[in-house]
Structure formats: structure tokens, C-alpha cells
Image (tube, rainbow over all chains, first blue to last red; front, side, top):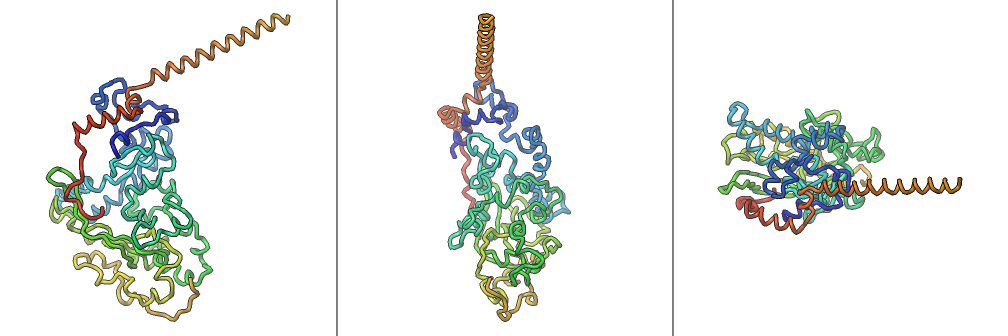
Length: 373
Length: 72
């Protein structure tokens, strides 16, 4: 987008409720000054970050009071993951890791304004529609600008050779049909991963008859507490391997992702809870490795093995019929579907000890007893 | 009596008309007054394009680092 497109305010906006508020009330600057350079002194580009309370809170207090602690706003799990893997014994090292994290990872956050008014800073901003406030953000320019590489592409069938998610394909469902405003604005204080958020999307919200105490389908009854829904109904997801970040000679930030590939791996759930009891879950390899910040410091992530590099995932590639659920023995006895020690690089063995499926846990071939799914 | 009533009605209509006109003129005046330089500039595409050129001279567009590779 050209600069003028990003900052053009449509006259129609001025007639809306938000348009009645004078510019400087939220953005500062000097509205009387005809010189744009001096008029923009002390201008606040996004008045909704890092303090959502001031600009939005006056009228939308019930939303900002929780949204300011939401996952998108704080990216708290990012910080927790980086800190868990960082060298905590050396304070200087930890500080450098946090700085590198802030430089490279924190731009991915979102704010009230960066969903409802403009694109996110991560993609260099720009109004969604002439400064109009969109109660329901357009997902293709908001969600997709940050999640377009993996999740959104999976959902919409953007990966060559892989169908779009059935919810998108057949029901024309999009991000906000599952990820409600309640979830987006939910207070995530103390939450370690998005999977712990009580307001997260859950299959059972729509498919209550399937995820019930007594499911009608035999295959659901057999697997209900053992296998996560996506294990049977997910297709391949995108996995990234070996990512490095740094700053080049011109001061520009860069990343190098060595390998990206589609794949499907089932692993063990490292944290079985009453809420998420499945023994088997789908995994995804995020772009994480011990040398992530090597251009800034050595051994910054010396506790790298404290968390797995194959993470529990909920791929957005759902289909009713998948290669693994076509018959019992497409999964039972099919070791290639499962993350095994041979699939894991030497340097990440220890990190993934709890998610790798040992031979004795691989489901053995069985007689076909179930009805076709 | 009827003439007096007509007289009162006419006065009432006249006064109402004047009051409405004053309110409307006042509002227009307020709108004009509230037109800040921000609005003048940010609602004018031509001005913004020219401004964009000026900004680029001072702060050239930051490209992508040549070292970036792979999917982000």
C-alpha cells in the first residue's frame, strides 16, 4: 500500500460517531498547524496501544478492561516460551534475549485499533476503510495479514494440493465464526498457551452430538477420550524448521527460515487435563531452534529443551473424511503418521521426549470392526 | 378573535423559522470551525500523494532486508 492509501480518511467517516471526536483527542498533534511536520510532533499513531483504556476505555470500558490482557494484545505466551527457554542464570544474557524478542516477535501483537481500524503494524498498517471503525474486522486484511503464512492459508486451501477446511469450503465459515469477539477480548492473565483459554473455540460447541458422553458413531465412542478431533479429521499442516533472526548492516531486521514443509504428525499430548484428555494430538513444528537469536548472543536459549519443538496444534485443515480415518488400519499400524524418534533431529530429542510416540504406544493393526465414518 | 388567532399563529411560525435557521447556521459555523488541518489534509487524496513524496524524501521507504529468506 502507498502511504496516501494508508492514511486517507474518507469524508464519510467524519459523519460517524467516532468521526465526531476531534482527531487530536486520540492522536495528539496540533490541528491548527498547517505545517505537517510540526503539526505531527508528538503524534500518536495508534492511540489504542499500549494503553487501550485511554482512547477506547472511556466508552468501551467493559471491553478494554479485559482486552488489554488478551492474547493478541499482550502476546504473553510468546514471552513465557522465550523466557522458559532462555538462559536465566545470566541476567545480562536474559536481558539481551528479551530485547531480541521485543525487536523481532513483539511486532506481532495486535491492539483495538489494529483490528477495528487499520491493518496491524506487522504489515505496516494502513486504514481498513478510510478510518471507519469496523465492528467485525475484515478477516482477509486483519487476521490473514499475520496468520496468512500458516493458519489462514490452510483454512482457505492456499497450500497447493491441499483442500480448504470443510468449514470454509462448505459452510463459508471464516475466522470470526469460531473465534468470537468474546475470545478475542478475553482476559488471558495467567494463561500459558491459547489452548488454556476458556473462551477458545471448541468443536463441541457446534458438534455436541459427536463430543458427548455417548456418541452415536462407534468410532467416536471408541476414541472420544483418547484421540483429539483433529487427529482423525485434520489434514497436513505447515511446519517450519530452523529460523534465525537478526539485524543487517543497514539496520533492517531479517529472518531466515531454512525449511518449510507440509506434513501430518500425531504425537502424545504432553499436558493431559480433564478439559483436554486426549492421549494423541496433532503436532506442528514452529520456527524455533536454539540458535534463533545467535546473531545477538551465544547460548541465549540455553534452556531450550524445557519445551517441545513439536507443539500441540489444532490445524485448520478439517475434513470429514481424511486419509487416516478412511479405515481403522489407515491409522492403526501406520507408524508413519506418528512422530517417532527417527523424525526428530538429534538436537531436539530431549525437548520432544514427552511428545514422541514410543513404539509401545503406536496403535497396532486391528480387525476392521467399525462402520465407515 | 379569528384574526387574532391567525396573528398568533403567524408570529409563532415566524419565530420557529428564525430559531431553526439560527440553529442550522450555527451548526454549519461549528462544523466549519471544527475543520482542522488534520481533516483538510487527510481527506484530500491529492494533498496526501504530494505529502507522501515529501515524506519519502525525508524518510525513504524501508525495504526488506536482502538477508531475509524463506517463509516468515
